[in-house]
Length: 419
Image (cartoon, rainbow, N blue to C red):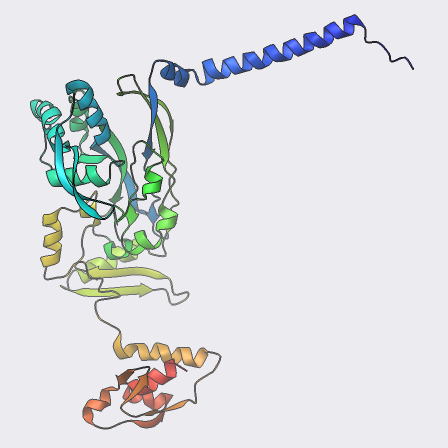
């Protein structure tokens, strides 16, 4: 059987299509390299590289039941030192950086170790330039050295929460070495100061930094976290998602431009059952008393409409971090402003027996007719829980719920609650 022959014209057409497809793929690739990613590849050709900066996430707002914003965010300017960049810049400009010796451990054995003297590098390479333009500030040298040794990936904050004129002045001057940057960070703003402070809580720097997360970035800027009350309780919802800034380093290792930026995402807003108007009225009424607490509850659904504790404190003093003198003042204040008198100034004591009694009546066992013996106390495990009558050297005997409430028998409610 003779196979049909392909005509020369058809072969030429087929080869032409293949060539066009190849040229199209080449053109698409050239467009991708030269146009879409031209800046990045140009930077690489020039001997530069890319650095990434983690941008802190933006927390959601906290609002009352009517949508009134109680906690917001504001922009804060701070001066950060990227210490590895400083050491690299010092080496390029002046040669071998000065070294310092410290006592460390290698495989569990104490040993003298050497590292760049970051304090001397900052004092010799940066502080004189800052001093010339009246921008030098006192800083904790020991803290700087420890930061360089243990948290190299995280920038060291030299000045926190500076105003805009200072930020502009700082930006206009060459500070001597690479690695100095102005960071714009969102910080918490408690709109009405001490208003509902014990309910809203406050935020602060995390106790620990996720080292694995920090290693994903050239420069790591962490988020704040809720430290108390609503800020802590709803932290997972208030937290947003961090962004990333891609920077270009030139051949000298200095950052000279931003390649692109993926902005951070704001967290969810949290709406409370609190009514700001009722809260304000209750706070004003209780300020006439030196120490007091009050809770306003909607009897129809149990919603908390107001929760007041006086004296109070301003959570803004904790932003970006509380000063030592302010913390000492709060600790020494005889009014104990940090204590939430609405819920935790004193234990509920025997008043909670009514809650226990109600729970037993509404539970599956229905303990309305339950009777228990009071022998001056009850043993659970290796501990003997005494009834208050033990000090009087008598017992309540065998009693039921009504009599137990009447005489406030501790032994009865130990057994009733454990039934």
